[in-house]
Image (cartoon, rainbow, N blue to C red; front, top):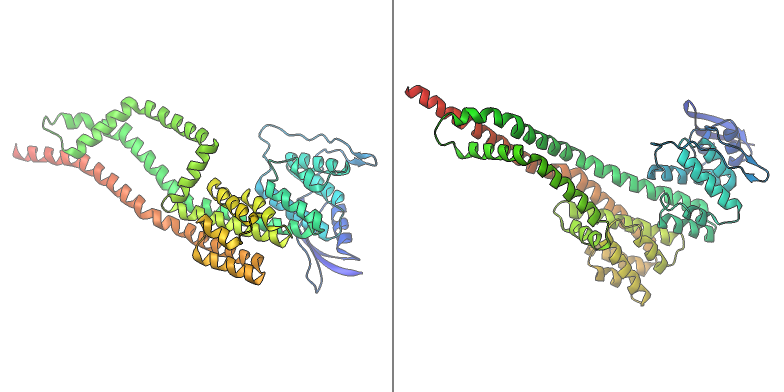
Length: 427
């Protein structure tokens, strides 16, 4: 009998405690029986753990029977949240912990299904269980939900099944998805301030053109003399906005919708993604982020025992950029023809000399997967630094534009008033 420390999540939140049990599996069974979802299970004085599931809630769901799983009644209403990448990340960590503790896969899925808060997640887990019970492999069962699990995820689970390392694969997938989430959070954080400033500037320009300038226009015209250039610009802009504002808004909305449709086409997406890589400020960040994702996914595939050609095929699917994906496919074709990975990478024209040197060393030493991890970490750090400095790089441009707007407004309003003051003093 050993003592285990555990953390779990229940209806009232996080719970920490200790239990005496023969194995981690027994601890997991006890916690699940109490309606607690294990997050970590660690033997005292040793390393262990991992993480697991979500707060339990039966949610009115039917229970399993000896003949199989009854069709549960899931209440999926309009507005029910979709399964998000964070849910898939948490699912990967939960499965890893439960499998590591010795819980059979069907029982682990049953526990996660019962404790899931999202009805869509409950439905998906039920369908995966039903598929497994009918004799379908786990990877094929997950592949029936392409909107939840992408091709790379399915490929890695298939590798884990073939190699008998399914627990390790789920842990690596969790780390991969955690990095993806970190990148998304960094991007959102970087564009939050510029987006707020731009929105405020657009709102200010609209108020000035619609409310402020028309109020002064009549006064300015009563002067009888020629108005200064800044004032004429302001009045002309205001008149154009008042007369054609709705048309302009309609054209902008239609152009945006047309652009969205265009970039969904294969040709449009290819052109747009290649243009993104060449845009100032943004292009460098997009390239670094995509290559970091490529290096991490490639390292994960190689560590899991996937052949290089097959790994490159799977990894190409993880790239968010069509142009980069085509370069990775080019690498795969070159490697299939017998070229070294380094030569194939040089031909793509998207890797830096330092990265190419690390690839060459990795091939020579047989430590390619470790060096790919370092490449992913290197690009990841560069992306993090670039995103943190993005606001600082955009801020001077926004300040200059805002300053020019304020200057134009001040000159346009006050120059005629100065003229009026001069006329008054002369009289």
